[in-house]
Length: 166
Image 1 (cartoon, rainbow, N blue to C red):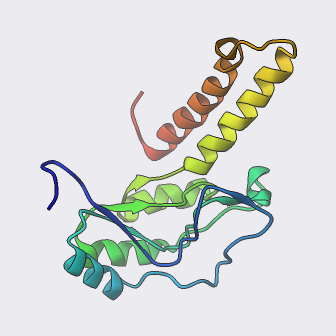
Image 2: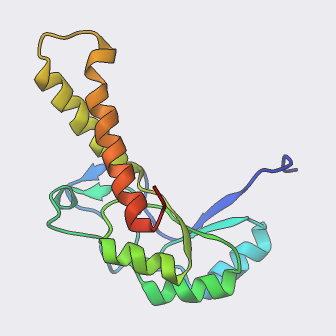
């Protein structure tokens, strides 16, 4: 039995696992969720939000850290799944996805986008910068602001891209 006000999110399809940086990863030839699978999954599980496989994958490839490579989404498939599922859609594994694909995915029916790996990478790079700037520092609150600022910058940029205000 669900707690009052709780939201259940379900993931269907091959999206991989974990916020990891990999030398290589799932290729574009992996299976995508079909509209029929989405409809059946929603009907049988009664989830409130659906996370389908539409070209997304958890984690990122090393080449995505430098921008040499980007994930690309099956935009028309998103539109079809949205129509079949009739519930909000979330994009798990959105980190490393081309900006234009993210914007088009929102217009096709994606309501929530997860960019956990991007945030973790920003945090790590910000922490490394903080440590480099203060090599002899051992007080966490003096080192961590660089990590927090780096995460803030990514969140702000993504919110602007996603159409958020302020």
